[in-house]
Length: 138
View 1 (cartoon, rainbow, N blue to C red):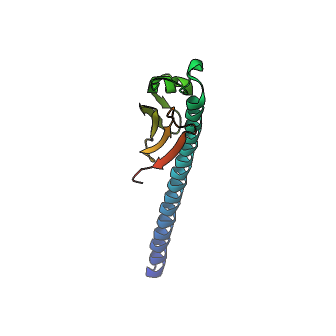
View 2: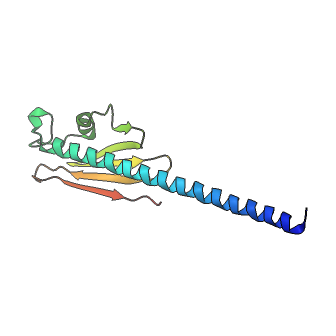
View 3: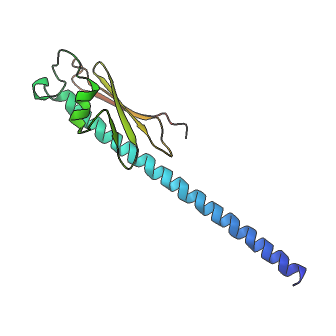
């Protein structure tokens, strides 16, 4: 083989290697974006259900008109969770409460750690406020 042929082979291998690495990076970026969107959809759904919990009378298992704030376990039962944590294909979600304010924090294995939904479901607030925060470092 001549020097030019070897140079062309080496150049071809380098170009193919770069193309493969760029393709892998593009795939990982799309996967992370899809996971983040799925977690956001889950948090919006849980937030809407917590708003329903806040607006349901205490006599029906909700928080409206309750003399003391129902704890995280009551809200988790309303969401259909078996405890204060719930895991699906997207992430693990943890529900905490402070008074009538409920916070759901997501934790994914690969991305979006720290995304939260906060629902202020106070009995004095007729319209619960839902806030979704993405505090992840990625």
